[in-house]
Amino acid sequence: MKFLKHIRSRSRNLNGAGKDSKDARHSPKASRSPPRYGNNLTKRLPRDVLTQIFAQVCPHSQDDSYNSSEESMTEDGCMLCDMRDLAHCALACKRWLSCAQPLLYQHVRIDSVHYCELEVELAAKRKRRSRFDRNGEAIDAPKIRLELFMRTVRENQELANMVLSLRTPYMTREASKAELARTVSVLPNLRYVDLPAGLYSDEISSHTLKQELMARCMDIRRMRYAHGSEGSFSRIPGSRLWMSLEVLELSRLQVEPSTLRWVLNSFPMLRDLKMEDIPWLDDTIFATAPSVPLFPPVQRLTLEHIPNVTASGLATYLSMPQNREALTHLTVSSTGILPQSLHVILSAAPYLQTLSIIQEMSRPFPMEDVSPLSSKSLRLLHYEITYAGCVSGHASTATSYYTYLISSLMSNCLPALRDLYVRDAGFPDTLLLSPPPRLFGGGENGPQMFSMGLNQPLNIYSKGMDELKWNFTPYEPPTTRGRRDSTTRPVSFHGAQLSPSWGGQARRSVLVGNGFGGYLAVPTDDGRPKSSGGFKHEKQDLWR
Image: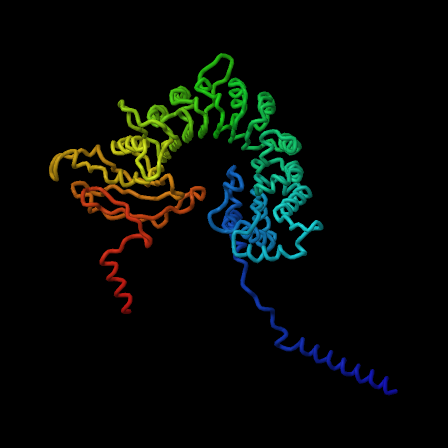
């Protein structure tokens, strides 16, 4: 009886609680609507604007170049974190998904580590026992990311059709050739992919990957052939393989010159050609020959370690109007093109914008008269001339070559030049301390020779033989004539940056007048020197 009485009392308590809860639901407070956080204003944005916003969340998603994972690293930011944030945006709603998904899959990048503080925390987690496989080895994170991406594109062909480029770390692409082969086999629109080094020389371990690439990816835009791949290289003419190829690199190939020209003409979209370590290549490669096509026109030509190609042979190539009008970027390193013959190339290439010469010389500059470097289109010049027997702290034979460069600059034969790289630490001082125009044409009020002297803005990057970073020295011409050049205001450059491959930012300095019409480069850590007026303003701020 007591047990039944306990049950009845408990049921009455529950009914009362239910009644109270029912009354609570119908109370004025309960009838209020949940808090609102405002309207979704992104619905009013056009799709292209929303796509641009998502592109700023993940900047590397816009990298449509054909550079490798190592060459396309951003200077700041974390690529993995940016991609994670973009993926979170895609999960917000269907409209955001339709705009963010192409950005996630067009240019895919797989990185080894986070380039931010998060990597410290993740590195500690990877040391735990749960992060090891059955053999006691740490799990390879980039390899797992590649496997997950492979599974996604193999299960969803719509996403696979979006992929245009795939970048992976060096060790991942070397150790995951089978995974790469299975991945590229379902990417029909792929334009660029990081490949293992063995594929370029036709190694047996990369045979399957190369066959899948040749059969499935017909829109490849960049490829490389190295020593060992002469067989597959010679079979290209007539195969219609990779007709959209734009960038081609050839390294240590042993083929006939006629075969080389036939292969180069098999790529109608070719615009960037690099040839290195081909000692048999000489000037005859540019000459006309019966029943053999001409050397094709390209926009960017790079010749490295080809000692038998000279300036006369390159001038023969530029004598053709289609070649002369196409070439805008030229790089020669350790070739037969000497500094004293550069004027021949510049005069034959009227549309050349960048020129880079890297040469080690054993003899001084010739004594005979050499025409100055002259070009109305050249904007960037890498002039890295070194001496084979250079001793640190002593004058070298290369000094005469930089004297020739200074004479070309002072004669204003390079009016469009804005950036100059030299391998001579004292070059900026030598150039800026050169005699001003008035010393050639009379006194203060006498006749002036305005054709002499550097009268154009120029960014000078210099580096000695024992230095790792480029030193940056800017020059701005005097704004008015008839005054002493020493009154020109100094120029600072807080925002100057260099490529990461050259060591990041350059050492900072400013220009000050030397009292004789020239300039001195003074290093500074705080940027622009302060005038007396600047110190006065700081003093007033302290009293406020």
